[in-house]
Image (cartoon, rainbow, N blue to C red; front, side, top):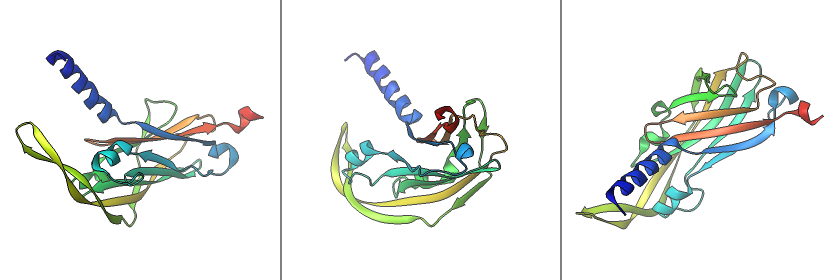
Length: 190
């Protein structure tokens, strides 16, 4: 592979990692039906679990829409971090916004209420630099912190009965995590 092509591939890989992916769920529109249906949205990190040889489901971020009414939108989220990257579970490291149908308009939280973190230890592997161009994988015990929080936003017309989707974006310096709720209109189904 030429040096130029390798550079392009490396840049694309970095951009893909920085952009993050979006996990989504489809629910009935809460403003049309008067309630929020069950809607847990997992953001799986299978690649990181495989790389660290951790059990599937160990490194999962999640979000759940818990309130959506004309005045307020609240989401319960959980993000993970380890002793090697504790900032990943620190909500202060993220720019947190909601985006609805009009992608040019963002809504920032009016309240971030941290809940009790959950800490566990898991045995996996970690890459260790051994000099030159080489590294090796060695056994390692990860201390994984799952930090839940409730994020509340003012609504005031940000989400209307005609809104078709809502996205919560956690934009970090190294990680972007996006959760999306696609709203099925009960009006269109009748």
